[in-house]
Structures are given as structure tokens and as C-alpha cells.
Length: 124
Image 1 (cartoon, rainbow, N blue to C red):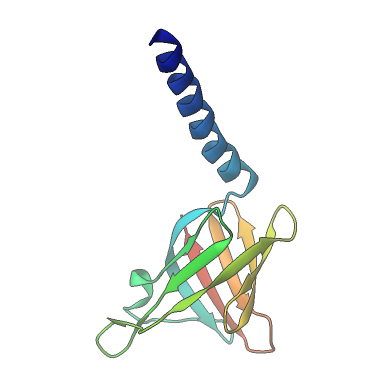
Image 2: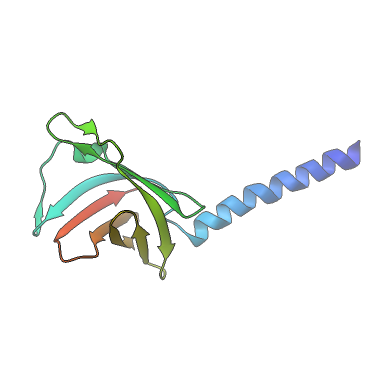
């Protein structure tokens, strides 16, 4: 019985460490809250922005929940997709559109990979 309890403790400790290690390797894992939207170099003034979140999961999936005007209702689908680490500060996001993410401290900025000039800013 003691052997089983000891093995259970070891397995629990190892599984809790792997989650922490994954977050250290990929610090974008978790939920981020939008703090700004920049369009053509000007900050957007929408009251809905702070309700928007993006969640990056350790299985490289993502869910971007967006609220839209006029009543800040949750957009039907938002975005779902995948993410990939390019280097220590840059990531690629794939949804029905493609985005480039840049991490700077506890903020991330997400830009469309086409020529549109929209940038979403999130904070953890």
C-alpha cells in the first residue's frame, strides 16, 4: 500500500511540473485580455474591447472571443485555430485568417498578416 501511495505522489509531482515547464517554454499559454485596438495608427475607443479575450492552450489550439458593437454582444464564433512558436518573441496564429503575434513582456500584439493596418493589443 505504501508503495502505491509513493508512486501516486511521484506521478502527481511529475505531471504538475510538466505543465509549469510548458508554460515556461511557451509563455503565451493562458488567457489574455484585450486592452486596445489600433487601426491606422490610432487607438480605437470601443467600449467592447476590454471584454475580448484570447486563450492559448498547451495543445497549440487557440480561442479568440470577440464582442461587437452596438451592444458588446459576443460574436457568434470568434476565432478558433492554432498557434505556433516562431522564436522567443514571435508566433504565428492560424484561424480562417492568418496573424502574426509579437510578445513583449506581459503584452502581446497581434497583426493581420495581410496589408491591413489593424493591431490588437492584449495583456495577461
